[in-house]
Length: 89
Image 1 (spheres, rainbow, N blue to C red):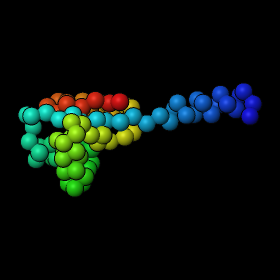
Image 2: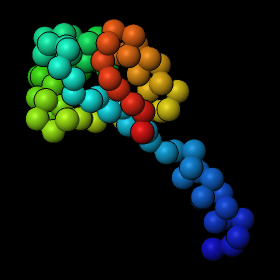
Image 3: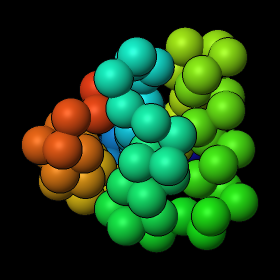
Image 4: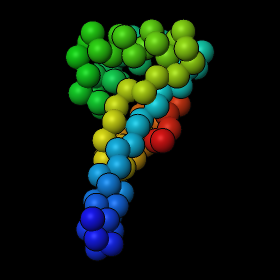
């Protein structure tokens, strides 16, 4: 593989990087509220949202969505605005 081909492949890999939206546990929001927000903002089904809520409750955090950085930043801001603790990683 030539240097130019390696450089193109490396650049393509960086451009395709996927980011994660992580929800952190708190003691202020109810399960129903968290589920509602996940369904609304992340387009989760109720089952997906409930599973994420339980994982967050027991493990302290849960990766709720993967995708493009700009898209996840918007979703993180929306979720943060309603009181959820989230981070794009």
